[in-house]
Length: 341
Image (cartoon, rainbow, N blue to C red; front, side, top):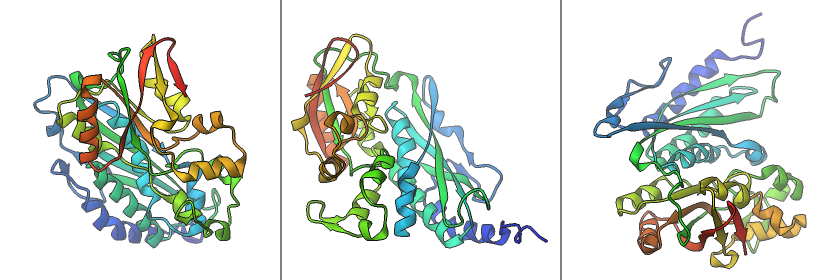
């Protein structure tokens, strides 16, 4: 008896590391010290220089049951982007620059080529965010999960000067809400998605005219990463008063998280384009509109609050970063919360 016969292939682990090295190296910043394969990832603290009161911010998250679609479609190169996005968007909407990222992959069986494809996606997400992939862990868990399945989670650390933190505390009545377009469902609400649509290869390969793609391609579209857009806004001299990453809980849970007491947000439903996938999902599942806005991003992956005089500059800065912005509403006096009208 040996470890391989017990279900853990150490040699496959070595092979996985070799295959992913090129992707990891492509994310490295000047602050990265050492290479892949050590017991920890080293990152120089030189990024703290020049800041009055440097603050470290961190975020951790996973991809959730969206992974089930990746298994069915046998496509593993995009979910890593989702994993990075879920973490770095949270860090960035607090006003921080993501510095580095670590991933954790738990699998039923280590298939090096599959692991390398997952890490390829993680590296692409890090590249989009400007963060270094400094380490990770691949754990083989025979008997704990099916051989063909895996789980993916990550952890990001960013930095900001305390004076630049986005806290929402200075949001006032009359401030403008700017929404940035999502790429689709992102990485939330897939337990409901999987109840509405048949989760078979045939169903996911079905082409929908209104989507302009197959259902599977549409649903696997990676989560948008908004780090560059937020950096562009800052570089334009705009002070973002509040930022909300629209994830699980949709509008009703996430937008109030950026608001101070005594301020209520009002979002106009007709102020932006809702992607067709949400209309299809709502119709197929006979889902109430309130549930849709309480579960999904409905086409807005990030919502910002800015002063009225900064609205046009913000819109231009977001476009410059390659994202699509909309003026979607405003802030008013009232009980903390959000109205969608």
